[in-house]
Length: 307
Image (cartoon, rainbow, N blue to C red; front, side, top):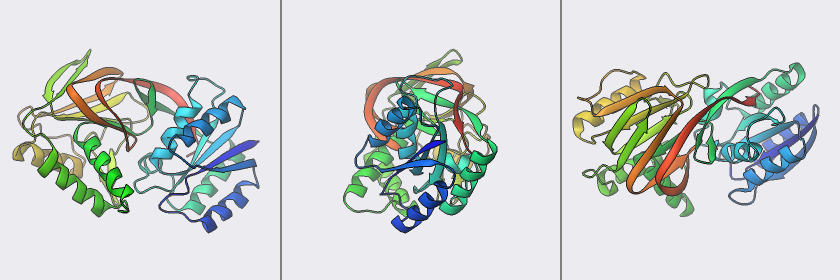
C-alpha cells in the first residue's frame, strides 16, 4: 500500500524528532513518501498529485489549514471511489477536525490509530461542505470570525504565537475597535427562508465549531458529519444578544434567541450568503479572499477518513 505523509513544518505541536519517529512507524505498514510543505497551497498540490498518481492513503500532519488544502487537492476532480483514504496526525493549535473525530492529539497515539485502521480496514465516511468551489471539512464563516482570523494571521506574521490567549485578545480588539457594529451586511437565503441584516454567519459541518484551549465553543451543537450544514447568524451585536450567544456557545445549548437576534438552521443542504460590501471569509480556520456572495452546499459520504 502506497502512502504520502504531508508535513507542515510549522505545525505547533510537533518537532522534527517526533516526525522521524512517526515516519519510521508508518513505514512498517506503507511504502511511504514524506513531503514537507514549503508554501501556502502546497498541500493542495500534493493532494492533487496523490489522487492523480493513485496513492492509497494520504496522511496530513498539521492543523485544520493543511488538512483543508490536502482535501481540496484530493477532490480537485470531484467525488469518487478513487479518492485516497485520508488520515490525520494533529499538529495545529485548534485541531477542530481531528478532535471532532476523536483522533488523539498525541502524535504517537494518532499514528497508532492510523496503523490499526490500515491493518483492519477501519475508516469512517464523512459528509463535507463546499463554499463555491472550495471544500471544507469542519467550518466556515463570513463576518466577525473571519475578521478575527485575518487579524490573527497578521499578528502571526509579526511573530505572535497562536494561542487561546492571543485569539482572545484579537477577538476583543476586533469586536470593540474594528467591527462595524451598526451596519449589518449579510443576507442568508435558502429554501428554508431568508435572514436579512446579519452581522456574521458561522457554518458548521461538525460539532463543535471551534475550541478555546480545551473548551469547546459550540453555537450549533446538533451539527454532524452525518447531516447537512448548520448555520448560526447574529442580527445584533448588542449586549443582550452577545450575552445569550456566549451562553449558548459555552453551555452547548440551543436555547435563547434574544428576540430573534440569533438565528440557527440545522441540516441545510444549500444556501447562499450575500453581502452589501466585501466581507472577510474563513474556511477551516484559514482566511480567504473577501466575498460579496458565496454558495454553500453539503455533500454526504464524500470522504473516507481513518478515525
